[in-house]
Image (tube, rainbow, N blue to C red; front, side, top):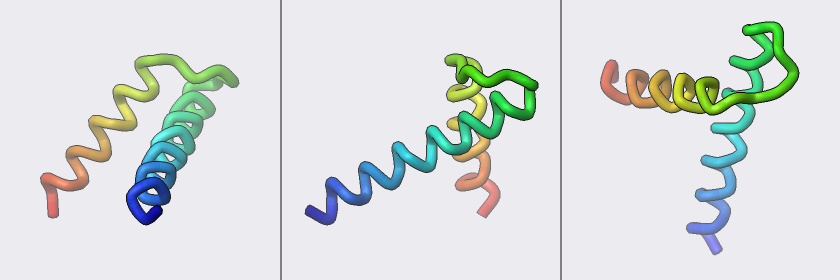
Length: 49
């Protein structure tokens, strides 16, 4: 059960960040480029630490 909850939290957070990027671009629909950028930002955050 813990693995499922962790996976769901990861996906939900990814979609929340993707949605914020779409809103920042003045769009209401998420696009693949939004998700790719969200993933890149997340990876860079891990590398900086």
